[in-house]
Length: 313
Image (cartoon, rainbow, N blue to C red):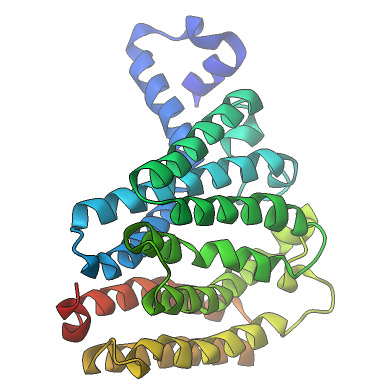
């Protein structure tokens, strides 16, 4: 793109007045991209549902949305720091080679400041507007993601398990922000999202296994001699997800609508994982990925529309 070339080589002085709005949009787009918008949206939704499930304490939807926003800010901080630390390996992977830090469109110093501001705003917001427990939880999530998961990706395949902990934490934090403690629904959602992540990520890791191998990331599908492991892991966690997703019903906190919907979604996810395990190919990996992307939002909707759950909100 000519405008971007002008910025890189000459700064904005070589850009015509007509092109300046495009330059500004491109620059803002890069900063926004660093937040990984799709991941941020998922974090917002899961933290929001966790907060809404705690609002039986007499709190409305406004504070729940505010708490979820603070969680997203800290998640954005984690994303930015991750991209700073991994800019060398990101340059080796086709799916990440165009990230702003890799191409130099954004430099490390400003990115570090950006991430720090996001982290401070999110953590302080939870501590000052809600409670210390939620702030401690979000800070612990940040540390696990950046200080443990990120470096472990180059060392051990256990990084996937470690990374699943902060991945499952948003509803826990959202619930804690509103309730001031961690109730059964908070732990149930944590368990659901923890198990859900493995088939989802195994599908992604299998599809991009050559990228990961080239970058030296120790992801199971990218490790030599690991044929079939991604499929087996997907089946194992999809199978575990079924009973975990039904825990709220066993505690009489969700009704028949939730039970029926969770069973249908869980069995569909499991069947897709089994098909992938029987033959690991791109079509079945993409099918599993698609089902995973449908599973979680639909389960969250089920939780909120189930009459027994809604009665307590």
